[in-house]
Image (cartoon, rainbow, N blue to C red):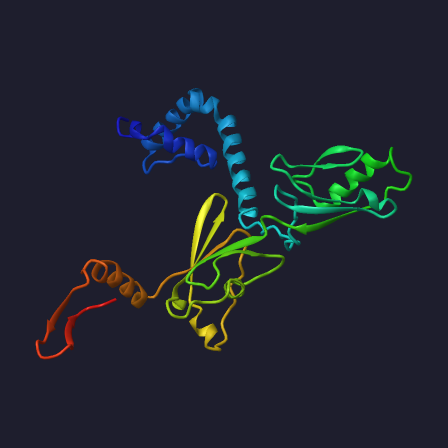
Length: 283
């Protein structure tokens, strides 16, 4: 009987859920198994059998639901529309009145984001699109004009510009009314200084989401007539054309050699004539 007592309650729990009665190889084992089964039903495991069965069933159903949702379809995204251009400080707008042209105004958006117009005073322009500003002006001028037909025309966008520097003829600001490539911006800055410009290593610096991005462009094939992919700039991009290594070497020699060695000369004056013979360096 001692041998039969070694049957574990865990084995009986499994057998109970599977409706299997524990049967030993000998009669005494069967008898002992029935006694242990009775102890199991009287134990806490037997009393918790309905609860354990419910937990297992719920777990199986949950796994089934997860397997059905394991491969959800990726959400479809709509194509991005045109960018929403809003007014910022430094932008210049023209406000035109069709029936009262004496009220026409050219206004630059102030650093505080406002413009000042006749009859209505200051108007908040920063952050508004031209059409949104027009709608506000129509509402503000309605008490003053019988037919307030108004148009808001953007004359210049302060941020729609790029900066071109380095070895170009006329470094400075290049306006960006529309799409513009790096090569086009350089051409508007007078083109490359071909004596010193390194066309294979043109640098574009771009700030996006408070991070600085740097691009390296090889524009030499383009200037030689080869077909290349254009690089389009974004507002506030910085285009820098570096010097060639030879130009850097020439500059180094001029700064550290020629300007350090003083001008010297050795002269010999003959006694038989008025001729002077000199040997030295002159600049």
